Image 1 (cartoon, rainbow, N blue to C red):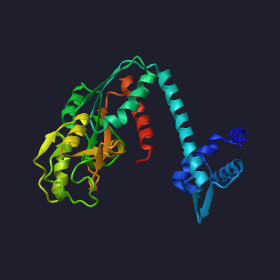
Image 2: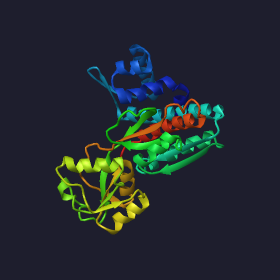
Image 3: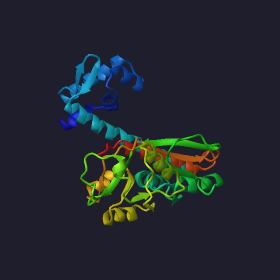
Image 4: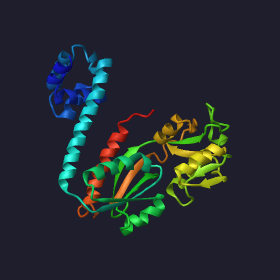
Length: 314
């Protein structure tokens, strides 16, 4: 089947099966791909002839992928992502961008997004310089306003418009409560916020937006925020603190899952109500048109975000 499959399969087939996996309805797929519904149905029929087995099952007006259809959709998405990456690389390399971009990022976002974005940026323009500073939003935002930073990436609580600043939502991801694997609550299956308020907590700095959000979260549950606080932005230090003492902390879900898989920490069953779940980037509205490195890095950031958010949790 291999060579015949490769000769017969076309991009239109890959786009249809990938869209169908997400949208379920032929009408929605047709609208998303800007083709007619009969064209979508025809491409599904062609795909089933190429594969030799059904790739969809029908229930009223909805289509559901068979196990083979699901596997094919996964491969289709990977292939389409690679083509998007190729188009992006060629466009970026042809732009001839040089110069520099200076980025400020909060520690809860930087490990997720920046490595991929920087790798894309440097591959496209090796001669350009990237400088990264970490901190929290309150301390970094004045540097963005003054021009010391070109770009700021942060988790946002109560988003608002900012004069002279453009902003873009990158992704949403829950923040979870974590503990060391030997913590007294590590095996708990049912917890209330009142159960955790008296433990030591690793927290953001007192003046930060994140700390205000944490205080508000405890207040929502009728609790005074913890007073036994360790204020730290260092992931390495925080993991070690969680290891040696019965402290609790907050961590983005993906990062928490990665460290839990290594046996470093556990995630506690507490509802954080979506606080600080949205990551955004900010830049001065007048800069993209004049700073080619910033414009390119924003594209790299969007590409890296798409790749990160297509990887499922767990």
